[in-house]
Image (cartoon, rainbow, N blue to C red):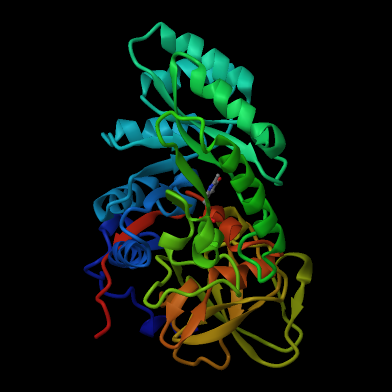
Length: 394
Ligand SMILES: *Cc1c(COP(=O)(O)O)cnc(C)c1O
């Protein structure tokens, strides 16, 4: 380490001072977020509605930013899972339709009414309870009935669904607005189960064809379905991960221009030289066998980084620096012997692009034995979020 050359970098103009002072942060490229929504809208017929799914703080990206970008792009409404998530959006002044995707317990229903939320319901008991409450107010609650076509999680089983739909449509106090189902596997190359689910859904729709009543908003697709199963688009698609620029699998269709919105960055806070035989970190999981130069990055599993051991990497000066030893709660170390430019206080990229190199959410997911959804939403709130507007490359 040579402290005389170590000096904090200039304050980048696109980072608020509060974040600049932090040594690790999550960057949200708000311009790319808007471009992603534009690209998605250009890929679908104008009449196909978009429900922007912003549950779990928009997979860690910030529900407010993503919700606003979605609505500005022309999304019909927002989807969330918990009542708190919905109330937070209403508190921000967002008046657009909000569809609650998870199931509700009876205690939650009065607040759902008070905040003018739309409910997706799979339990007839909840439906009746909701209707009873609604009849005491002067407005009907819009409901989307869930049909279980094979996921076996929520909803009325497809072979009983046509009767349930007729019953639901006749209950006073609720307004049956939509019919929905959900794919158990839509983003893999093997679409056979997805097609089976789709056939079951169509069977239900077929039985309802001549039952009259106002047309229902039919929706089935998440990102995988939207990309690969246009025959399942119906009237609306529910997209969570796609507007964030991340693909749920290697095999699903790619949209030109779509790019990840989130990057995770940090600053090197210690640079040291190890002698042969020196160890690094807890559990003595790393031992240098030759002279090594290492850089310590102040991010650990307490920030949502996977607890790896001698596996994985971060980007330092556009190159991959391998992780050494085990990731601790607050810190990890990388080998920068082959990156002599690496200095104290330099920026590193834990997730995202640096020059030609990129560490994707899917790559981290493989290290974590998990999925990219878990990686995105797994970055903890300990890392401040900052919105940046990167220039579009010419
Ligand atoms: C989370 C969720 C989605 C969004 O899925 P993506 O694959 O992120 O697009 C859609 N529908 C339901 C019911 C969900 O819970």
